[in-house]
Length: 159
Image 1 (cartoon, rainbow, N blue to C red):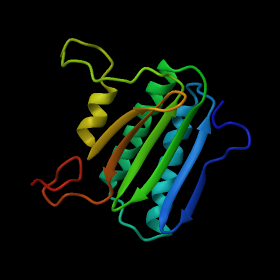
Image 2 (cartoon, rainbow, N blue to C red; image 1 turned 90 degrees about the vertical axis):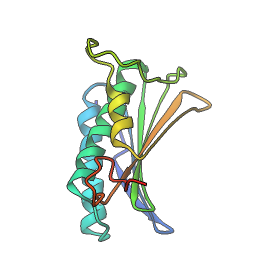
Image 3 (cartoon, rainbow, N blue to C red; image 1 turned 60 degrees about the vertical axis):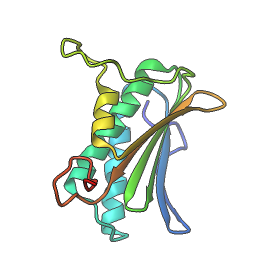
Image 4 (cartoon, rainbow, N blue to C red; image 1 turned 120 degrees about the vertical axis):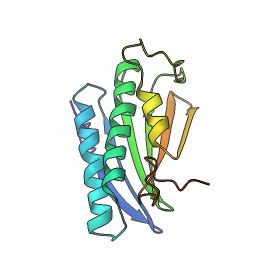
């Protein structure tokens, strides 16, 4: 359970790109471990590397990691990989799983219970992408590290 043996979350800095990644076994216990990796990574990005990381960014990153990893655990058999990367003032949260079926956002239905993870992810992210991999799929979301002076939940400044 949790991270796969020998694959503990690693933080790397190569050519001014900060990143962290981990492979998990796909059991529900890995969801908490993935959130822990994300908050630890952003704490290090701020404390060690001096980049601004707002409380909003910390919370939204933890939420997006939770939603994407939960979807991977729920819908795909096998391992889950989480990659976090800092680039141009944002954190890119990327989750790979073995399911070849691309996720979609369900039509708005206030009576529906559950299946709101992608809606939430889209609402709090600056960008979102999903694509097939040679095996499985990869879902990624981009979250601004600094707050928008206007208070936007996504951290982006209104045009």
